[in-house]
View 1 (tube, rainbow, N blue to C red):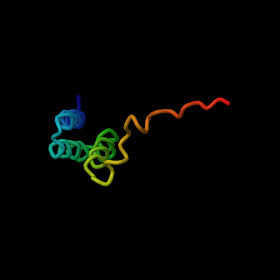
View 2: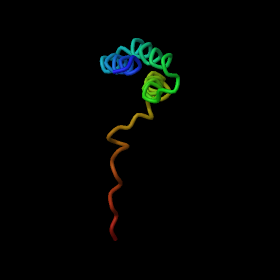
View 3: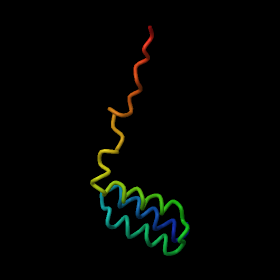
View 4: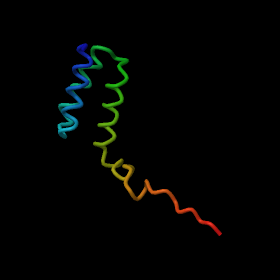
Amino acid sequence: MSDKEAHLYQGRLHSVKGKYKEAIEEYKKALEIDPNYKPAKINLAFISYMKNPLNKDRIASNKYMKLPKNKRG
C-alpha cells in the first residue's frame, strides 16, 4: 500500500467515526503526495458537501427514493 492510499484509508476511518476534521487532514495529505488522486478528491468533496448546512435538504431520504405509483386506467 502506498502512502497516499494509507492516508485515504485513515481518512475513511475518521469519516466513519464522524471525525471530519481528521478525515479532511488525511485526504489533504494524500493530495499533497498526488494532487490528481481522484479517491481523495471525491472523499474530500463528499465531506465538504455533508458539512455544508445548506445541503442537508438534498440528502436522499426514503421520501425521495420512492418510485411513483403506476397509474393504470
